[in-house]
Image 1: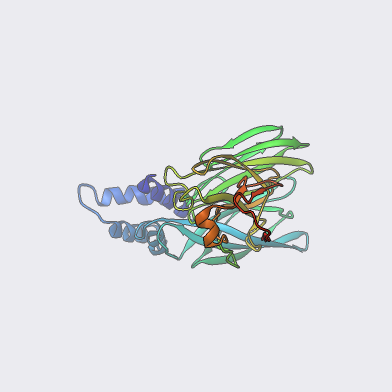
Image 2: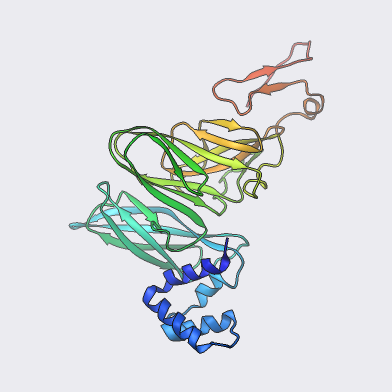
Length: 335
């Protein structure tokens, strides 16, 4: 991770090639053989380009971490021969909490027949919304489709037209397509920011504090796929989420940011330290890793004596309960 190159790429997107390269040439001429601070650079580019760079430098330079942008949802309605779409965006952050201003985000509207229109959205603060007109009815909206912004995401799109396995580089997700009747346009985004928290906390369930995925796209009528979501306590990836063998790794799903997280059927390939969570029926939407603390809800007596064993964990459609040393009548309540 190179903070300097990230800022340069972000500034190039923010200003556009013409203003960026003109300002860069003038800046190097102005400060040749002299020292210059980040504040000097901010003020010089503001004067040279006519664009106030205060918000940009606050977001990308003067505060630790990296901005993250996501689409909460969008609404579309007919407007004569065209369509009007309202997009609702959100700003988060990888790293220390900071909510900046003067955000610029590129979005791409796409129809079922893959007609596309790209626009830029400007907003300040945590959320923003804007209305755009398109000559087609959008069925999906993608953020930074061509990866120009260099925000706290890793994302790629692929055109998939046959069954097989598709690896989305550096997103920690592999898709196995089992059935497809026509071409599919599928984007995978690995979000380097915490997912939204549960509206109603669940005792013993903890969502990742570091990352989540967004799977979006234009799918044919028949599309069946599995998703292989990678987890590990190594490389500082899930080490703050998975802290011991009593943490049972699961995956949560929601179709959009308007919905609550819910559990989804999966299989686990690996152990508690590293492996894959395999979602058998991959749907478009957000996915987040979570853990169940398997000792939450067990009485202190059972926790200390180990008289009850429940396995496998995690389970599919069956579990086995061993009462082990108990020889008296009793009642087992399962929640």
